[in-house]
Image (cartoon, rainbow, N blue to C red; front, side, top):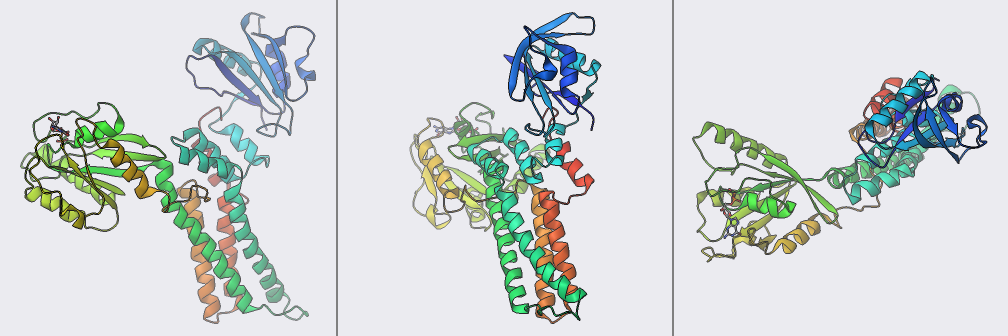
Length: 456
Ligand code: GDP
């Protein structure tokens, strides 16, 4: 494999930049560009040691003074020899050193190439490699801790336990199907059925956890709904903690959907402040209303806002009816408590039991509202310690495996030949091997790593 190089820190001004070289020639290339002060020779350096020195170009001109860190195969991130140069964190100097290293014989690394090499050298499973990308992109505590568990191999072990049980069944079936004349004990169909059912249950649990886990990893899709001027934008700004939506007194100001991410304790909300859901003849506004309705259909949390300083009208009542629709969690926000109240607060609970009165403008009731949101999604809904799939690719593999296991169960139950059962169990195991990368096609591996950034 070639020796590759990339800047592993962001290309922005900072304290230091790290340029990483990995491959069989990493140390000889480093030796051509990095010159330690004192007696040290780069190619003689032990793993896990550093040297202070200068980076020089072909003509011997000094580009920067820097630290070289050496990792020896197989005890490195990629499993190959690695040389890392930590130089001053200027964009120009970083690019210059990167060019000097390429001129000395390294090739530019592709997206995720270091992690891909770690995977190909058996340092990481595919699920662990994907968790590395998740750690980098994690935006909240749940996302980070879930990536951490996967990096430690939790998901891999759960899947491996299922695939091992399938492979064990396959072994018994194969012996019996292939050598019918030998004195091999007959396959105990009841035992086989029990083992398939336990694999099915394990996969179903992982798939269920994914659905609740994903809202914590990527945020809860939340819509703030209500007719114009009830205070949706003001509420959104309150939750975000800064001014983003345009707040004015003219009805219909918020015409398109504004999306922001708000972090409330452990929970991340993906908030859309939509054009009020109301009847309108204005073409542009109509589009906004259609968009708002679409968001409403798909969201997991709807915060319905009412202005209690003026009596409820038909539009408010329509929104209340929407709260009864299943499939999402709801909160009723009674806004403008700082003004004289014209609405009877009782009665709202028959539409949704989560009711909170606030003054979005004055920030009153914010804590009660955020506690309510956190309480709605934690803890009974989700165990942060459960193993969850990191992405749709993994989920899809698990779904396919589950489909095959279900087929095998049906085949076994309806007395089909054991050949037919064997084929479906074999396919289920293949899908799980693809999930962990134990037997993934090159195309799958390339697709996974193409989503990484260069330098990782
Ligand atoms: P939206 O159309 O639902 O997004 O409503 P806005 O957030 O734009 O608010 C409409 C008007 O109501 C603005 O003048 C806000 O300042 C005002 N408003 C919002 N919340 C409150 C509140 O809690 N109390 C009072 N008194 N006024 C509010």
